[in-house]
Image (cartoon, rainbow, N blue to C red; front, side, top):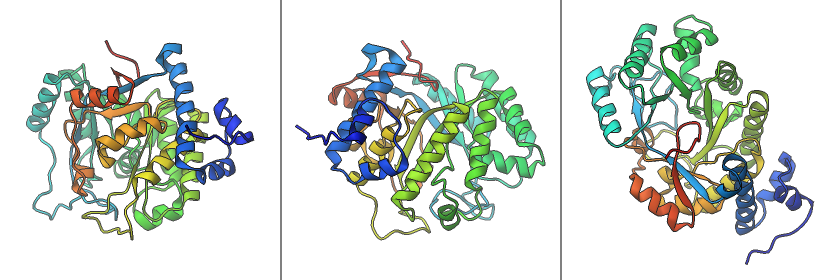
Length: 363
């Protein structure tokens, strides 16, 4: 039995009210178990809104595949172990043959989506991307292309000397279905200058999301924490995400994960632990009252902690993720298939359901 301090902030959380950053900071200091109860109450409210009164105990997941079309990148983020330069022997740009093989394997496994991202390649032409999208969309029309993060779009706009809205619009016409929230890290420029000084700033990240949402593309929002940021920085990040959602209503989900320091230039004294992860996720669920879906962290924290996270505000178990290259480059290599995901969801007391990118339940 968890004791709840029934003060004004608690009552606001339990009744679905909006908390301020100051109130969130106070909540952050409370016992972890209490935060879990409060976050779970918000999860139930969100699920009931999404799936009706009987949907409070549903936990969703998707079958998709991560495809990194190139590892060549010229922004050299200190937290990234994946990027290569054109001088490195193991740099690559994906071929259509390799792409088709991956998509055939995904189709055979019942997959319906690819998460496609890459480095900031300085030499690939605009038509290469358009041809790639058209090829996928025409040959695999059943697969949603969830691709190209905000930093990539800002990179395209600069390299191709094309307005951002035109780039995103042209990509959508060629087959892009939605946009991942990669490159968000922490939306505080003081932090961004320390960990990724050549990458876009916070306003530029949000600008991509605003334009994409105006064009009818949905996206996810993310946070990568546990490096040089403070708790207050995390809350500022959540505030900017919530404010953007108030403006454009285009975020389908929020996903946060901890920095993985192995094989990276950026070092930390101590890797962020499980309790700190669960505390941060719970605060995100409570604070982001306008984003209905929060994803479990099993890719970085492991399956068992991913399961525990369902009691701290998460209502989605993410993806089967047939392939993952970026996080695993930093030393994290967890893998799950659909049966294992469903077993973990049931083991936590919930009903597993497959979904698409827009969180519509699939039969």
